Image: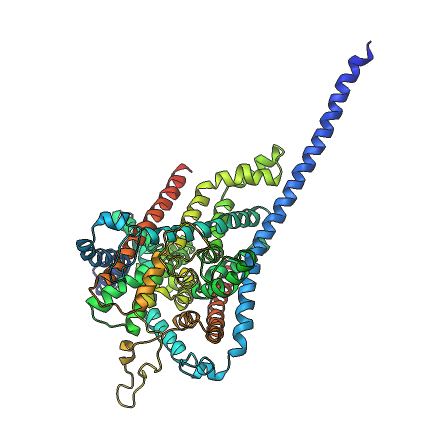
Length: 318
Length: 307
């Protein structure tokens, strides 16, 4: 036997093991580096979020006091407040909720429970997906042309509420549908089995069981509407308003008045935009303070929505 | 024995009334669903009808070829190109930030992070999308721009660069959330097969998961593009609102949306050419975003048919 004959395959296996272990090592390294990279890009996003909060809070929080909420905007930065802005935001939100919630939920119920599979249904569904992707400023242009100039509603709280209502309608429709879809068919079958009609089934079973999901959608939609600025700038919300809308309560019968719907208004994001656009840095402090209030409102609303979603997911065990 | 069948028969008044009520309710619900179509019709009708008089005064050729957009000057020029360039520049910069970060975050969340931690991180990441855009505008103008100025001394107070970067951060969650959903819906047996062949997690992620989720990921990108095209307040605040046909990101520029805001802040009389010009700009924007929306839908549908 020739020794060299034997030794050749031996070195091959050896080099193969070395290659393999090197390969495994380099792949493990790549794995590790990618995990680090992923963590870093996640952290980048979160740290930016944190930086935004901190920057806003450090500039804005010292400015926030009772007077800031109870004063009208002013030429003097240190005397200006956001009274008309938060009252306006509140009034516009009420109108938005009143316009969007019933229509959105009704549309969601129809599409999930009644809609036959045909062209019209498909058209409506496609349209809702597309509508969700239309830039918000386009809604503002539509509202300016339709509500302000064609229907003569003026640059009013009503116009603003309806504009934002239409804007968030797709959000409510989509979340309502998702909430209804999670209810298993056995519930419907049990209800029909006891002789309930279609609407009774929806009214007594489908709606109560999906209310958590629907509520989540409504809150998300309203928190989106609170921060929306562009469509309201387009319909001509004013940036300087030193009066409040007409009070909804009156001394005589019927004690409620809807005159405030026709009043002009400003909202917090517009007030903030106005203050940022000024060259003097004292106004930037006011803008930051308004931003803190706005951000807190959105975050609290989103937090509630996340909590409700979490609670309902745990509670429901079909 | 009394005949009870009268109560259960379909013609019993209680049952008939219930049937009628059901029909009425169904029609009301249908009207609510159909109203969303009316909104679209309303948008298109208003944008087109307000834009038509504009094209009676300005020729379409001038509109797409002229290199200046100065509708408010005494000798107005109506070339949409500076605004379209600005819009695309801002979108491009935003995507340079959002696509890599969003995709890597999505891959990390979907393949590397334990499910219960992921469920906690996702809502936090989605808060990025919940922050009002006017707050992002503030952030871009008064936080990001000063930081960038340390690296780029030539950078002025307003630039498309800082607006684009902040817009990119803003749309990270749109991209990461949808891409993550797409990656997670890749069947588990594909990952197992890849692992059985000896692939590492990194190889599985890049050679199996991302390619199989590709159409889902690309429709997330397209959603990101259409968000960035339509984003208004960040560019209106931080980019300077000066229509500028330049590809230099450190110069101020204007976008279609910022122009609409700028004009809306002044008072232009209804019916003047300046007023019509915002509808023309809005129509251009709508056509651009609709194209991307439809493209995204088409990609998604093709993907679903294959499965």
